[in-house]
Length: 80
Image (tube, rainbow, N blue to C red):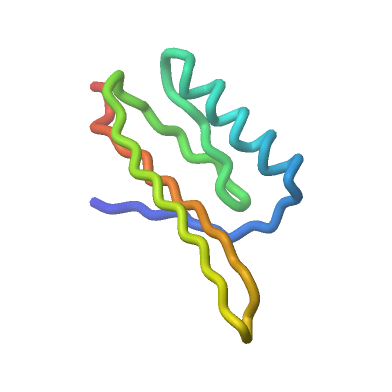
């Protein structure tokens, strides 16, 4: 079974920092984490070993201007 919850949100820098900080604090603690996505919260159960892929893209075009993107993919097998 696959369940996917996704959303696109706009935040200012302070809001983004707080969002990532709350996730980081939960990740550092033991036990499940609660991830807010749109209008719901998804409960996840991180394992001790976590894989993280980080991708940074910097683009510069004459017509659209500069754009920077960072993508994080964090994955694990849930603890039982």
